[in-house]
Length: 230
Length: 220
Image (cartoon, rainbow over the protein chains, first blue to last red):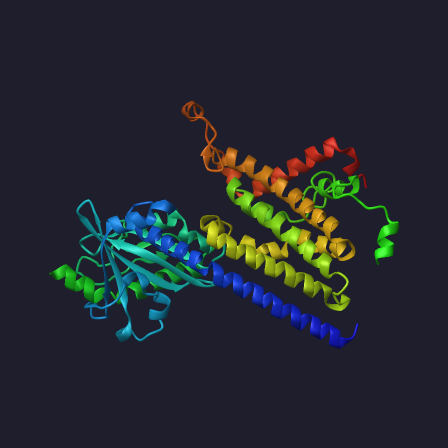
């Protein structure tokens, strides 16, 4: 067989494959996006202790999430749909131009403030949601996920034992200074309100979580401080 | 071509030879227990039966289709790039499967995570394409692909059933160990959830398999 035939064969094959795959991706996209929206709702709800089954997630989300807001870096409310804000895009913009989503949940009369965070792990993106009690200092729940961290090591940030550590931790100290939770290698002292244990073998991912929380919450600080004093 | 066909007695769809293509890989030519291929995904996904079932179905689909496609193309594939062609076919099918899973069974797709993508690297698939589909007609190739995938899948399900029932006390997510067992002090074996137990379970299956079929015992 001539080189010409080999080249032709390879080219035709690649074009056919590209057509088939792009058609499939286009046709299935709406369903995949719906699944991702539902998962986002489930993740947000899980930070306030509500585990929503797939089928009921949309209903429960509407029931518990009382308000959604988009804030700017000064903590002022601006126009926008909080659920649709993509942190990946926002994090690339200068702080002054960012849209900051905030979800306010009402669970039997108690308000919870839920903010999304996003950063980098070892291999790819990591993200999550943190919910705060009415004092805007104490963490009520955390939910993390990742794109491609190592299973059994870094990937454990999305497991409940790691997430549960954050419950009750604080992001402001007694003097009201911003002091976000850090993930400590080798174990955090049990009486430290601002630290949790890192994952063995997942140091870079753990450091990524620390950075993600600090950077992610820093931009909400003006809003939190305003809300705390009022 | 048509004259040639008339001289050969027509083979029925499920002739004994074709049936063997389907049944041998489940038994005495099982890709996992006899050829010891594809072990890595067995270790990874067999914690729960549901995930294993989905992966088994995915592998059956990919392997059946890949064997058919390669068999159809077998006279046109330039030998020099045949491995690349095989890889392209398998990779495209895997991407399709991954997209379909994401659209219809999102939870399971999350759970299987990288292992759907890693079907590409499952040496059983490339092995069958290279050893069988390139030299055989479409229908036998299809049976060979489905047979080997079923052989792989059956072990996957067996291991998953053992690990999920002993490790979590459930099957397909439903509780199978009755409550009174827990009340009298039965505890789920957490070790079963860890990868080493998959290896040990596969080892035990290989042991039983060889005990029953002496021809498989390697005396050397």
